[in-house]
Amino acid sequence: MLGLTTTGFFVVYGAGLVLVARGLWKAARWSRGPTVFSQLIQLLVSYSFWGGSTKGVAVALAIAAVAVLICVFQKVSTDALSGDEAKDHPVL
Image (cartoon, rainbow, N blue to C red; front, top):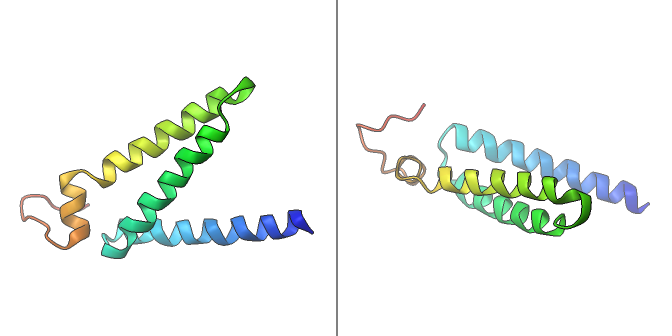
């Protein structure tokens, strides 16, 4: 039973992340908060993998999370996601 509920939780969480990614793609203001929150969770998960034979997984998760956080906090991203997009910084 525990495996089933855990699987259900992660399916719902994954679907939520897909919606957040779609919001980022469309530069929706609401998508920035969940993005930052999920990357902070990923940093904590990477910390839990530290040790033994899973250090590589921990490093990969941490690098990916930090890269996403850096991208989200770039000035161009901040301008696009806050609705104050400058005309010389188009969003792709």
